[in-house]
Image (cartoon, rainbow, N blue to C red; front, side, top):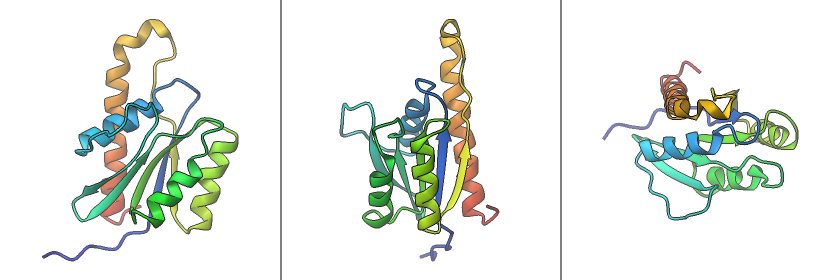
Length: 148
């Protein structure tokens, strides 16, 4: 059996304004990794195996939802190697995730996902989510390869 290559725990944070598809991109990533939802709730927390690694997904990231506690559970209880989270573009949720990463000695990668700015452009939203998912997967592959 191949021994797990050690990587530095990393938090990947999708950061965007409200209603710009952060949660949906993270949900679709979780499904693409083989995750199954046990909830009808909009926001969720889940952990899934990815080869020898564990990836945690958390969509909480709006003001008042405090992603910090869920991220701690993914680190402490689930021992996730990589956590994909969400936050707004600025403010408390950004600070919470960044501060937690620093306190727990985690890599912190924050990026703005692509999204359509106008409601009339909703026809392209699926393509935006797919691009976000592929970008996150590329970040994950780079982390596992030891390049990040």
